[in-house]
Image (cartoon, rainbow, N blue to C red; front, side, top):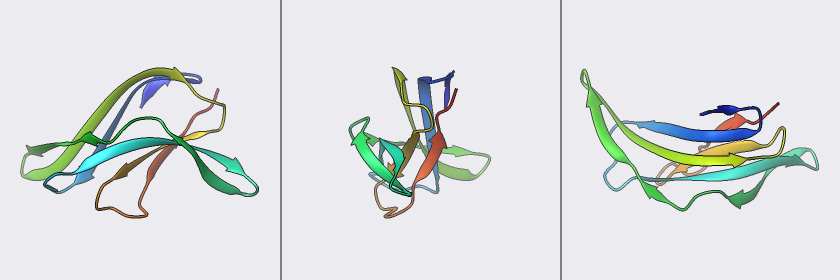
Length: 93
């Protein structure tokens, strides 16, 4: 992820291995009532691109957002076929 303070310019995510037809989506999460909870989808599902570098196979997806998000909220990436597994980053000033 790249950006300044609360504004996120770009987000990139990778998934180990090749997963035919893999897609990814970004969602916004916030801490409420003692738990992190999903607020809304930030992007639609996007197909990933299979890559291989020095024998390492992975899927890659990237978004250009140029959007601001609430302080201490989280942007989380989910990939199809990876139920319950999220990669998240916390947005902060």
